[in-house]
Amino acid sequence: MTQVSRFVGLDVHAAETQAAILVQDTGELTYRKIRGRPAEVVAFLETVPQPFRAVYEAGPTGYCLARRAERAALDVLVCAPGHILKRPQDRIKTDKRDAAKLARLLLAGELRPVRVPTVEEEQLRDLVRAREDVRVDLMRSRHRLSKFLLRREIYYPNGKAWSKLHRRWLGGLRFDDRASEVVFADYLEAQDILCARRDRLERELAELVPDTPWARTIARLRCLRGIDTLSAAGLCAEIGDFGRFGPEQLASYLGLVPCEDSSGPERRLGQITKAGSKHARRLLVEAAWHYRHHPFVSESLRRRQSGCDPRAIEIGWRAQRRLHRRWRDLERRRGKLKTKVAIAVARELSGFCQEVALLD
Image (cartoon, rainbow, N blue to C red; front, side):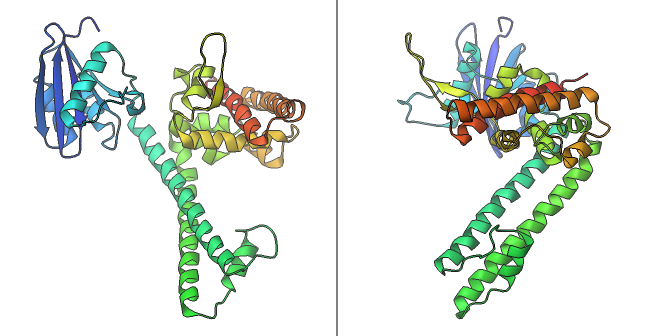
């Protein structure tokens, strides 16, 4: 940082970018508005006297600007918006102020840069998140349909909902009035369309996994109980390089560690921070529920482990024994709620995932 003479804050938008240039020696602050797409900012940065360092917030414009700057040998960082300090007294927000704030915080070293994913990582992550979006939409669609039936006092008599039997039962429902028929048909059609979209995305993802750079990592992660292709691909897409974290750092990155409000000798821990990727956190918590059962290698797990690295299989078995003991201890001996136990087990499961992913 001592070799950098200028710090550039960039408030990037789709149609224009506001730049603020802060000279370290004099404290002079100048502004420049660049009209055009974010890719055109590189041409402006090439006119800034070297050495300088620029930064912009991660957002909907993505990482194209950072990648183009790297190819042009320019020092451009991407920072995490959630870690930018905001004073309660700040009531005025403009592009100039935002760019100047980024330049000053960059000079002070108060920004947390994020890792710019490779193009392949971003492509896989987009596919994984598209499938996650469909899952969320499907859940909302099913809720609408089920609540519609509840308002009509229509109840499914055979237990488990959204099975093939349940869908067949839904297809046989009829209503006396035209309005209810139209609403029910629309809700049911939306549910069927989303199911078809989900299944198609899952097939595409399963076909693409062997050709991705994470094929070996995904195969090793599948050796863990509760983690299959979709979960393993989701973790790889959201985390990227497992090697950039320590075990505790990975759990913190995923928001699985408790928040803390301590003062003096008293230490107060609260809920988990829920920082980072909520998709990766959900995948780990869902997988953690499998460890409430006794250690056991099912037929599906045996098929997933077939032909895999024996070290990954050994780690998977060690994880089963360790996490089941942890679950039993927290639930039975310490009387914790199952939901809290699942979070604690997911936190430790992230460490086993990292150990498997980093096998040579």
